[in-house]
Image (cartoon, rainbow, N blue to C red; front, side, top):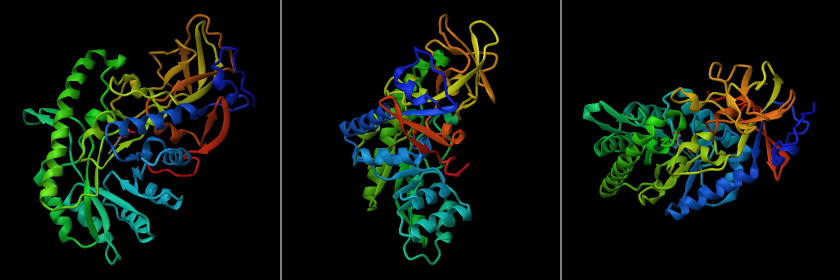
Length: 406
Ligand SMILES: Cc1ncc(COP(=O)(O)O)c(C=O)c1O
């Protein structure tokens, strides 16, 4: 099947889409590589030593490998599920931090298989139950499973009435963390090797969001307050554990949205970044970081119900998070195309309102950008990797590999 591309279609996508069956996802490798270099340079300039990429924010093994090969500052992987960790290890990757806790025996068995097989893996824990489950799962193992305490970095005020950040870990104070370290020391099969303090309210905070203009000033205030609170909290924790005599191998923090400042904290041994490499439109609404758009979904125009409107096949790729228009794909080409308020993006079709003179006909391709980095991969078997305007490779997504980790 051949795709008709109008003459004013962005030239760097023209050749890559010729003959492609739509919908299809294009990764502009040149932009992707620039993002990878930009993240490495930003973290390095801020004093950071290591970056542990977040696999969930890509979900394409070939792209993960491309990041690792680009610069030695990229070391290890932050994974999101035990089954995923095992699959990636069997695929040849190593050095994992599973950053979301689990107490399921099946999950812990997956981690044990990696560990017993010689893989390097650490599991995040935030409760005594989690530690005990990991300890039991490791019964009889030759060496202990490395575990990392996940510490809450949210800012709470007025007795909990104000809560800035995510609701994940119950470990808030230095003493909470100390208790978990002490318990780990008493349990067989586990060894506490560090802590993770993810600053979600900074790394995920949009402060120039056109969909929530009224909130932007407040978001900037939150950023200013949170930044110093998070920094002070991570410093206090690091100093307390050092005073207690613990050797901290992993102290992880940050995300794509905080790579400009998190690596300035010398007590963090590593920062994480993921979505930024693909430049989803979520990051268009941050004032402190900038990434190039590096992946696009191309939809086929299949109908034209009214003058100024076309309807495309596919498009319903809504991102997770607080529901809102900013979680929907953003029409990118033709410039000025907009979603239709009454429909948004559809399960199988998506209408677009076109600017005058857009010159898009049935069979043409339009481009949209996803809001986040990894979730689009759950809807496509492969991504087209485009270099200098030509598709050079097809890269299987997790879905294309037959992987589904929930
Ligand atoms: C624990 C943790 N660290 C870091 C990140 C940052 O990932 P990204 O760079 O894709 O925003 C996330 C994202 O949700 C996370 O949950």
